[in-house]
Length: 91
Image 1 (tube, rainbow, N blue to C red):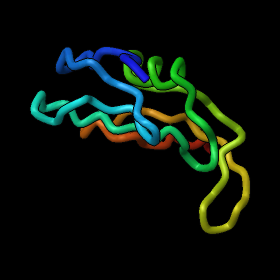
Image 2 (cartoon, one colour; image 1 turned 90 degrees about the vertical axis):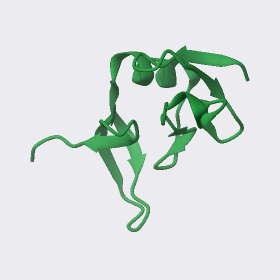
Image 3 (tube, rainbow, N blue to C red; image 1 turned 180 degrees about the horizontal axis):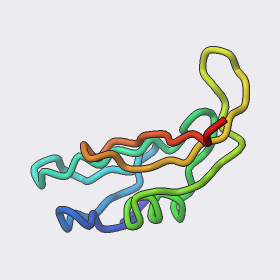
């Protein structure tokens, strides 16, 4: 609980909830909404802070695909719409 980071775009405080990192209210215009668990991997407060402030974290090699259950590697980043996206290594 408590403030994890400040949105660089809106200046809004981002809080930790039971399941997400998000602003207390959507009235600020900030749409950051980071799940605390992404692809079966727990996102720590420090990782969430870095994702919000720097725009990306990773690469992580312990992400698990929902459908196949197979592990994969990706970098997590904040897209322009302030949602989490994935960048995969070239094969």
